[in-house]
Length: 430
Image (cartoon, rainbow, N blue to C red; front, top):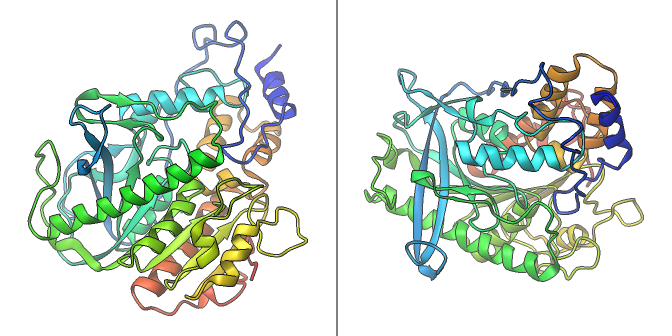
């Protein structure tokens, strides 16, 4: 059987499932396709979309320990986290460009993504460890205060899987802090220690989801505490690494926002409910209840927020309008209870994974393997929807930036007032 036939077969098996939490695994038969058996096989590095802002970019990773939360599985006996800061950097910086993922994390994500769909893609196809970002490692920060935005990834997803959104926001003058949630998302610590997180085959039940949201909320509040320490002149990195020059003066902690994808969107809303230091939040296609179909509703859905909040959904997930397909009672209830500024946007033609780097990574991978075969359109539609990856990335970047510009910088944005002919992919659900 040809690889193209297996690709089509994977499509027929139902690769259109839209959530990591609901995805079924259709692993390849190792006797059918392996890297060793394919003389044309080579790992694919990827081209991240160029950021649209005017700022040069820097990035640094921090290893943090929350002394208030015990974790007997960790060497310190306390909860440990890895975070990355993405920020406006010095134009003159000569530091190397950061890689998309550290090596062990790259292997873990490659194995998860090649084994999840049965799409005739051998393990080792995704060369994330050699893919370059647009950000320079530990570059000096531009020495003026910048608004700060935290990011929480989807269930089982690495903090690096939304880098295209994160880098673009940083290029527009924001400091974006991305978090791995240890024991759930894959996490690689300095020195090579690695925790794989929740197995790809494990589906979250309501109890798991509730605990995960609580843990992510505590992580987010703790990370903000550590940013406050940096501003005071402390270094919270447990390994004592040197912080990039200018970092303390580049954090404006009077203007703090947060966004997240899927479970990270739920965690974002819950964090704003519990901590008023966060001034605005954005949910990328994440339900606000512990079970997508049965509930119970999250506390934030039942209470609403005083801070501005944006619900940004796909065609196959959250809806606030009863009677429509994919209606989500948690979004509808939140909409009724929300006291602060609110907006509900839809990305027309999209499925949930279109809100991650998944969309352009798979598009580039398939074109590298299959050329311009027409089957790529069918498979990409099954995976991320009918929206074009380039248009999807561009539209998401514009609306995410507009939301934070309006609510953290006080700049009224015409883009948030109604449908725009420049972005036919975006519709105002409410």
